[in-house]
Image 1 (cartoon, rainbow, N blue to C red):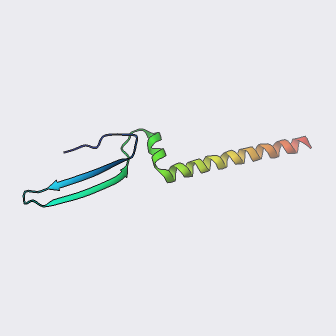
Image 2 (cartoon, rainbow, N blue to C red):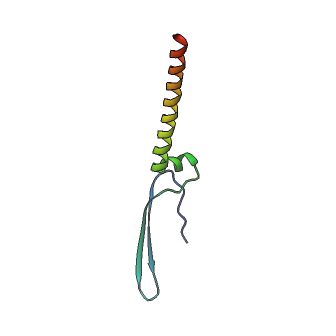
Image 3 (spheres, rainbow, N blue to C red):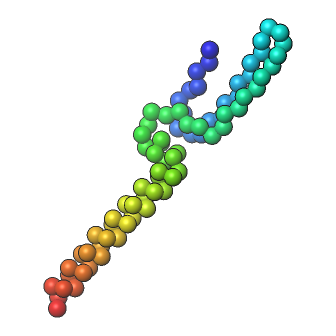
Length: 76
């Protein structure tokens, strides 16, 4: 048995199986991450990462616009 080590980077795995009859099978698994760090898992999940950054930017934009609108009304 072989365990895949935890890393904060993308890993590739190649498994080669050979039975007693001499049959050989190869399986590759590419671009996966094994990490218990929640920030690494968030960053490596590109759709989640980009989507959450877009939402954060949108919320900041709304807050700035509301602030500007409120200050413009009180100035007049």
